[in-house]
Image: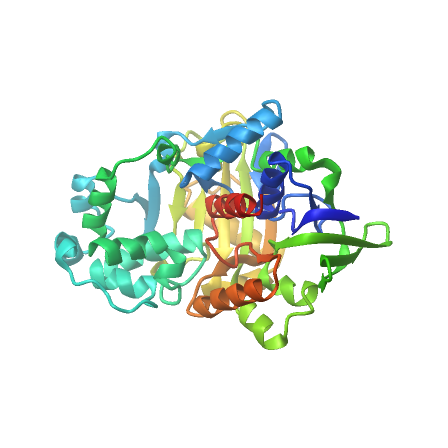
Length: 457
């Protein structure tokens, strides 16, 4: 088989790259080891509950998200449609003591919230005049303590990073993990001053597509990847094994075992890898060990994700995006999202769907707990945190384990990015992409893919 561009991985990044290239008329093919497309994005249905086993939501943080969804609505004849969460989902909760407390959303709530100390509330007033940092590898925790104070780190930054990265604010480097925050200080000298100035900057019509709204697709996120895979058709090969990619005189040669056990080859002029860094040593055997060790220096947070459904929510107040749990509260869960409050059709009428996140970098041992132990944790927090009566139990509990859930952009990131750049320059036609660089969110994945497709088309 011959193709112009070979894409490795049929997750969000790989499918978006291939789909966008196909729209531009390019000859492209995708290879995927799983038997179904979508990678981490998988939507499930059971007894009226619609739940995710990977990412639950994305944010419309760049125009590429809206442009992709517009393309998909057209090519899928309306079967794939964007769904954004209502304004109620802007409410974010933080656990403190014995209850969830809403993060401040205005001046008065910022003054009265019990989440932060009085000293740090006054400290925030001086943030615009605080000296900017000079350490390019400063961690998010260090930066936030310096500018905002310890209680902001404990009850805002730490739970936020648990929710996004399942990570540690004192190991995640700001310019890699939260580059927009880093640039606010570096370019404007202040978070507050920078945010105010950026809000006044003129925006193009395309810029305004980035609404920052929380999004999914009607019926679940799998409808996005499914629509792209269906458009690509037989240009996606699933269930492959033993993939090896090597340079050839005319470009690149990929050999693999297909789902029927037969050996296959694909030649191409371009190769784009979108898989995890831990897969690269096997599929790129021509890269010398030292260079590959640097590319593969990435740590991944392990995660247990649990979908919990209840048919009768007892009129509980779950109109929020969800609740996050600070490390200093010493609980067994990182957070609980409320998908049925964000999107339609996720639970039976009168019911509710919750997504628990357990483990992460600080509690990797949670991945080793048995289903029975995890179910006990879920049921305990179901009563303690979600305030369901003791005589009420969840109607559905589904447990998913992810050994390589979320990349951690730590101090090693700079060396990894430099190594990737050197390899791409050394081997013409090779692009190493995926969540090992350029961000971990769905919007980051979509933007990276669209940018690669634009470069290769």
